[in-house]
Image (cartoon, rainbow, N blue to C red; front, side, top):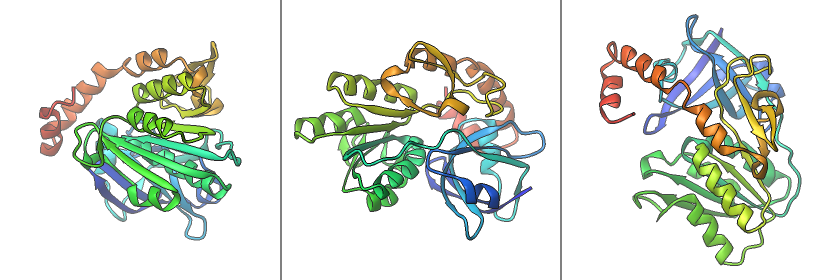
Length: 287
């Protein structure tokens, strides 16, 4: 059992949880993730380790309430316990001094971007950050990303904060300014990563993406997280989650992410019968 230090909202339907997990805290590196189970009957939820404190034995996780399991997670309070956590999982990020690294985060994808960008900064890279979301209320970790960035720019789809537009507009802006870009990092929705990668290809820029497929065991045994990279089947949990964006078949990834959508909605609708706030969320157009 893993004790929760706090579980608090940081944006609309996005929460920051700190959990006591000494072994994971002492071993984790940028890019690693955990799989947790909220309660004895809960499903497994993969989450990137945003930060850790080896001395306190704690790890920080950020998640978005979008389905039954993450809404259950959101109901946890200070002093409650998680049933299980396993990690650190996945390959840690390959970090070196590239030069100028453009770090692009979309929505809750900013959470896994942060530890990687931080590691890149500590390796001596210049970090230019682009944060994007549908609206102001979904921008997270702006202060933290600002502290490790040499230049930070925010874009929102509706123009409610920063500049109006997509993160691809932000990348094009940097290219138009003549910035010499040595590496692009992009983490967010699959469709966002697809188009950032497409733009990177058009300008001959190297790009690393972090993939978020459906995942179950996190050890490469179940095969649920299989992705097509360079024409070959890879497992995101053990071969990734980071890959050369130019090699990723994003259309296959997007298709697989929709596989259980019908059942996810049905589960959430049943769960909403017990929690009015979840019912309100559904009525807001989650479909």
